[in-house]
Image 1 (cartoon, one colour):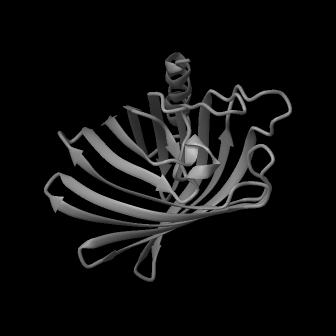
Image 2 (cartoon, rainbow, N blue to C red):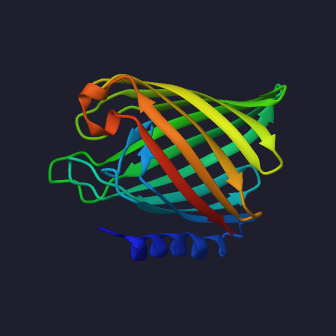
Image 3 (cartoon, one colour):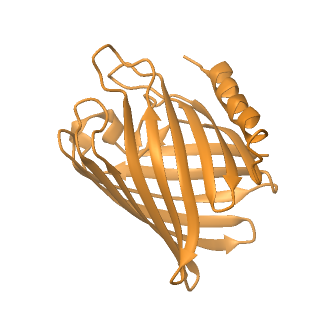
Amino acid sequence: MSHSPFLIATIAAVVCFAGPVSAQSFGLDVGVASQYTGKGLGKSNEKVAPFAKAEVGFGDGYASVFVSDAAGSQGFDMEIVSTVGWRSKAAGLDFDLGVVNRDLPGARAGVDDNFWEYQADASRKLGAVATRLRVNYSPDGFAATKQAWWVELQGTVSVAANTKVSAAVGNRMADGGVDYNAWNVGAKHKLTDAFAVDLRWYDTDRHSVGEPYEGRLVAAATYSF
């Protein structure tokens, strides 16, 4: 099921909000992926997923909303990720600290489909490699999952003026959920200043758990306004 009208309405709401509160910056991305992924897992039953993200900035602070088609055995057909965060620099590191709300509309009755996450990114350039360490914690996650952690290390290298190759490894630990290791590797190429394409392989060490944990090649195209 496509939710493109809902994507547009959600992003439009953020745009309207930005004006009255005198945002200092505004960004909008729209795109489509061959399938939706999150924390290393397939989250759209291998179906094409349109997505959009809007962000308003206020000095070091920002607020954003990301919306994508999604699909899961619990019945949800969309994922909405709303974030309020703060970016700063200290001790040679770039920090991004955020409070995240995830909502998965369409989940069947009785499924806990709305939950909070607390996320911290620390980034630094080490020679030619741009590194990022991400720590994400949820005190009460999706469905039956209680406390959950996601820790991921990513490295990115520019191989041409408009092309970057990156790889990441992550670990998921969840009370009431599946523990697994995940990784991805791929390349992002900017065709213009606004239009970029990404081709990436995702995989985990828990194929036996089900289709979302299997390896997958994902292509995505994004236009930034």
